[in-house]
Length: 75
Image (cartoon, rainbow, N blue to C red; front, side, top):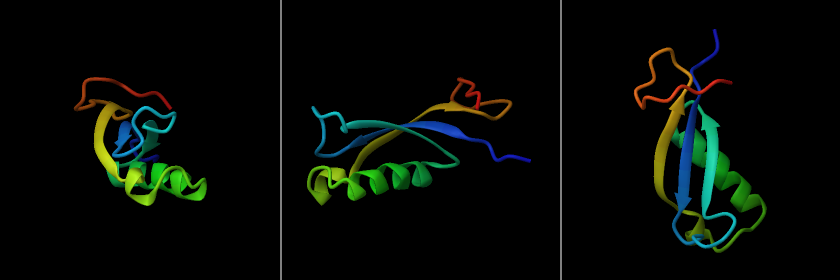
């Protein structure tokens, strides 16, 4: 059985106004979603380390049968 996946919108603290300021990630939980985004930003040396810190994260869609956020994600 596959785990439920969720689509998250992540806004980084100091990257607003850049192509990397808002990111979207599919993951099982918010921590995993941010780790995916942060790994990419770190590997590509985008901004300064403090710019890569998460400002906000928002659940946009969920692949479960009854998503709490009200939006079904199909993967």
